[in-house]
Image (cartoon, rainbow, N blue to C red; front, side, top):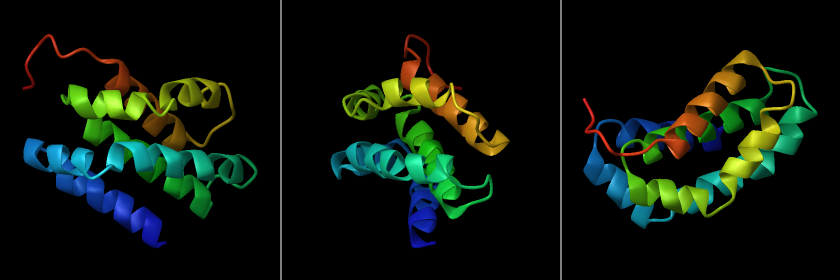
Amino acid sequence: DVIVSVLQAVRFLVYDSEANRNEFGSLGACKTIPLIIDLKVEEALAAEGGSLAWKVVVAGLTAVSYLSYWHPKNRQLCLETGILQKLNALDRCKLPEKARSALHSAKTMLTMTDAATPG
C-alpha cells in the first residue's frame, strides 16, 4: 500500500538526520501522521493481525517515533494531536506483537526528556 510506503520513507529519511526531522516537522508530518494512525486504528482492531490497516498503524507509529527522537518541537507537535492519550487507550487492547512493540516505542519517544545528549 502506498501509505505504508510513504510512512516507511519518512522513517528512513528522518533516521539519523536532524535536518530532515526539522523539514518533515515543518511540513506538517507531526500533525498528519497521528491522524492517519487514528483513521486506521478502528479498522485494524476489527481486522486480523496481518491486515493492511495494522501495517499502516505500525508504519505510522514507527514514523512518529523517529520524528520525535531527540526533537522536542516535533514531539510537542505530535502531542498536540492527542496521540498519547489515544496510544494509552490502544495499549489496553489486544494487539499484534509488531503493533505493541511500535506502540511502546512511540510512547517512549513521546514521553522522553532531552536532558541528556543523544549517542
